[in-house]
Length: 222
Image 1 (cartoon, rainbow, N blue to C red):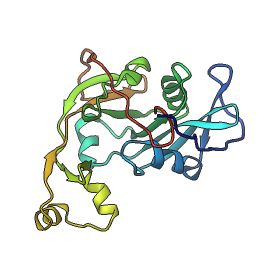
Image 2 (spheres, one colour; image 1 turned 90 degrees about the vertical axis):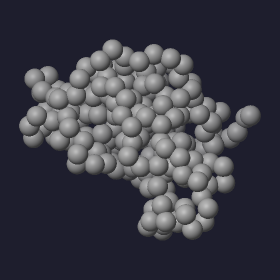
Image 3 (cartoon, rainbow, N blue to C red; image 1 turned 90 degrees about the horizontal axis):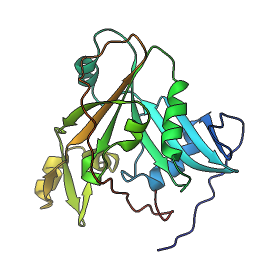
């Protein structure tokens, strides 16, 4: 189904990995609308560094890096005090080949070093993590989340989304409203470290399989 494309305006200078594409470090406000309207989670995530992908004069992609959601993650992977960030959101709304891997690969080079970067590919969304495989991340296997999602009007809703709506105790709210909760599918873990940095996570063979795209509300595919 064809839908109109929002006019995500852009400007300024940046790095051009290929003709027609430019990657710029930016402020959260520059990509907030794109991420919250297009990403399947439909909500923001922690962000410390933001980058946008510009094609002609339009912002057609965004990536954010921020603190991991739990301090336990740092303890599980780090052997010292090397700074750790998580790739928290990645959105692409252009059909230009390899746009996602170029955005991730170039933006990562602009993060302060030494540093460790982690990210997750959501198997529940049909994601395998090919963009991370293409940009030199190592694979650390599947990890099962500790919380659950909730079936609201036939759609899976994350507890953090409910918290943003003012529901402070999702489990109790679900019981009181006869809302079913379901386990969250495992996620593929990926990591990248600056040269010379030691990590605890393993480096395993990459997973393979069909990677499913999801329908975005303002673009044919995202």
